[in-house]
Image (cartoon, rainbow, N blue to C red):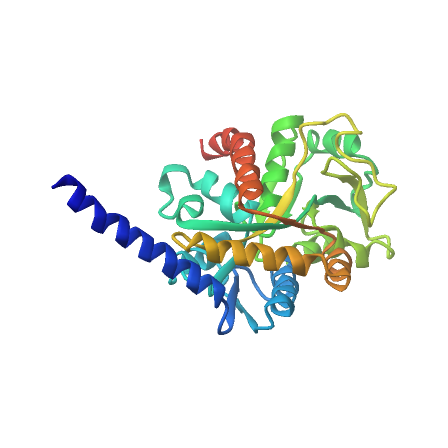
Length: 321
């Protein structure tokens, strides 16, 4: 009797696996939607459009980019988590939306991207640079820290829970500098207020800062990475300056809804790998975003996520107190 009941169950599983494999063979048969959970023109948006173009070239299918911004990326990620898990609705997540913002919310979070989304591919990584208003009169990180202990300084970020926000909080934790956070809705707005002197400094992506360095209104004093920024090879890293803990690896990745069949995830991962290998795609990413193009699969993305969880959860807990 037990054997008789087991046979239909095995048969159903076989049929389900066969159907998933057949769907993957025909995937994609219509346009794919890739959600950018941040505003148009943001680094996430630019990268999404470039990766979407790469995927479209490989699949020979349209990849539509749709912006659903708000709540530090949560709105866009949650939208995709509720989509049909068939590979046709994806989202460009990152350390800010997947790790940092949920960590800051702690027990208050109502959405957990790590359990409600399926990792597809890690596509790019970079570290922010520390830019100060030139009128502050500081030329080094040590001088900025010393000044912060003497007077009230503020730093801006593109939103609570963003990589730039947590880098600023990490600076406070590592150096003891009592600086105050001012959140914005995008890096360009932060840059404008660094230029005007409304805020004292910020950690920002290199391409956001690059166009404004020549006018001497701002100064780049450190790169918060393990390696120097390609755009600013003469700027020392925070590690070189004596703060090896003050490092942020700001990464971006593609996710699908949880439950997306593994053969379809594999098809998406391979298309991204092929697309990111195209010289014209790599060149656009490096020049327009300052990011290092990658094409690593779900396992690498999962490891990156777990490593960052371990690193940032303790700091997030301190901030929540």
